[in-house]
Image (tube, rainbow, N blue to C red):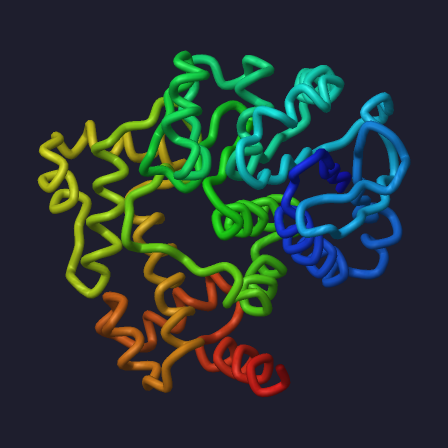
Length: 325
């Protein structure tokens, strides 16, 4: 797996450091043969090989420059402090570099104001995107052809992902780890970085999924499901909440989210269970009931299917991390 972080003036180091740690930790959990045959390569790319001073005065040493045409699988564009427009003029060669790699099949993740690079390149025209909340108005004014979603924490469009914040970026990195290294390793990383990757349930957001068009009814359905985890929920009940026929709701949900409503419900229930196991000393039965499972055996079976650990094993791992911190 090859990952490239673009470095430019005003970039926030946190948009690089946490993602790098998560990816490196995940890669180290693979079998040694895989680590040798398919190593994780992380590159810092800048206008030159000179050390780059970023926000906060920290200095990073680039590995290569924007003139390098070597292939990469993922590009990460970190957020910038303050108004990002000044940086555009200082790094004009970044946009051709982005376009070249995207046309060659590279996935791109832009965090916060890092989304302006994609907008300037025209890659977000007609697409749903998000950015940091303080830049909403200026972004909407400068890029009227972009469908800015102010409720989304993550948006997806043809291999391009925009994340609203560092926390959202961390969720996106977990998604990449699942795609490249598998669910078992992603579950371990989520455990080890659990306090950095806090799941939000207060607002609807466009989940990582298949189609490009954001649908407000599906976001509201996601939000409703998160707020009623302990209830007995069926697809018909959720469809009624959205005022959609069941067949239409099921089709739209699968297109937008990439999962059926049932699959999505199981995933967010297990996510909520992980947080309860991590932060509270509730019994397994109580945790199960809080997230909508009346039978603790069924809950434990489902938890292991998704996380590859039993609830008890997961709790022990988390507690060991906390006590050793």
